[in-house]
Amino acid sequence: MKKVNFSTRAYATNKGQVMLRVRWEGKKNEVGFSVGYTIDPEKWDSTKQLVKSNTTHQINGKVVYAREINNKIRNFLSCIEEVFTEFSLHDSCPTGAELKESVNEKLGRKKKVDINNGDEKTLKDIFSEFLVSRPQEGCWSLQSKYKYEQMWNQLMGYDSNITLEGLNQSKMLELVNWYIKNDYHNYTIAKQFRTLKSFLRWAVKHGYSIQSGVLEFKPNLKMVHRTVTYLKYKELMHFFEYEYPKEKEYLSKARDMFCFMAFTSLRYSDLAKLRSSNIIDGYLDFCTEKTDDKLRIALNEHAQKIIDRYSWYKGDTVFPVPSNQKLNDYLKEAAKLAGLDREITQVYFKGSTRHEDTFKFWEQISCHDARRTFVCCSLALGIPPSVVMSCTGHSDYESMKPYIEVADETQKMEMDKWNSHQYKSEIISRMDKMNSEQLKTLFDYVKGIA
Image (cartoon, rainbow, N blue to C red; front, side):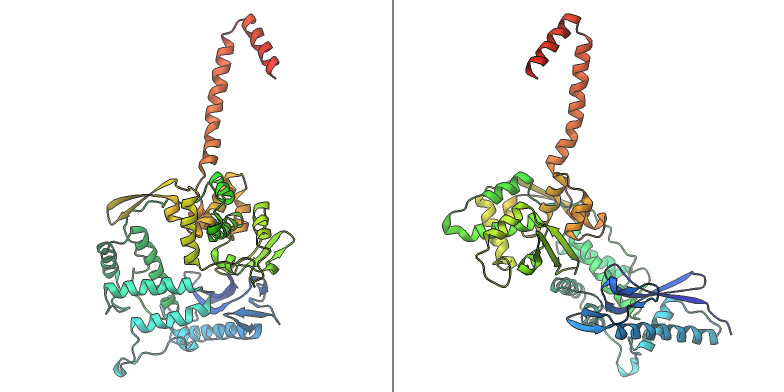
């Protein structure tokens, strides 16, 4: 009997997803399993590689006890050991795919397919299973489900009869051409392929087989960075202080909601659910709706002024926030009236064809521009990126990068260093050419205006 040496490690990711890693053959092979729970990382015992005893966890609105999660981890480990024992009895070593398939079968995560009885799962069946199972494995918003459904509808628009087995590199290339033919931006195409591959990686983790090279496929598309739309500091303060006619009070409210988000980095989803209990000693203390990040943000005087302005409101939340769509509509009207008409040019590609669109800021303003405004204005004011990230909830610089656009004011201040150096050099050069009398006259003049 050939014994296969292997090692396992259970751990919780930074976002709390409970995972299992298996290595064998001297770390030549490695497979990861998602246990199916997302917990508070602080409640994980890295020494025991289990959830801390006697803790509870809020998962999808339900209270889950530590023993349930730990039993699932132990069940995983037991199944992994059984699979390696079975392979050892046959003097063989499993591949990564074989280990996944065998473990998932023992866990009941994959049903054996009986082709003769017509029980083979279609790609639609697998995607339906994904939509049910994936939200239980990690926190999902309605927006997350929407983006996968959107990707699925586009995939079906390309080929409604496509199968998981038939999805190969050639099909992926055809899908790219379908997007281009249907006038999609290259940026959108790349985003949809990332969503598709996310679904396919889930399928692989749950025991389904996909064609070689599909996950490695990358669309060969011309891409340019999109221009980040945001208000410069002077524009933001002008917008904040602009007075609207009394008959257009709804525009003042829309403006206030935008500015509060721009002063605090809040998303619309967090603004709409902000409660008085989230305001503690000059701080916003809350858990984000989208990512479940626990944030503590110091209120500046402008944000506090907006809170005070709505002290009359007696609803369940701090502000009377309209729907996202309605707020975006009001913002366009408010920004137009306030004269936020700086022109912005977006360059993009559709296939290999270059396009360029120019529009005024008020035509495109939306709630999310407020968050970008917070990042850009904070950097322009000299606030360190690490402090900005602590407010936005970004875990690293790379994840914050899409929101960062160096503000013109910051760039000008830095580039003026060239100018100041040039002026100093020119003054020194002229002084070198002066005689004693001229230098004395200059000294007396400077002394007189000092």
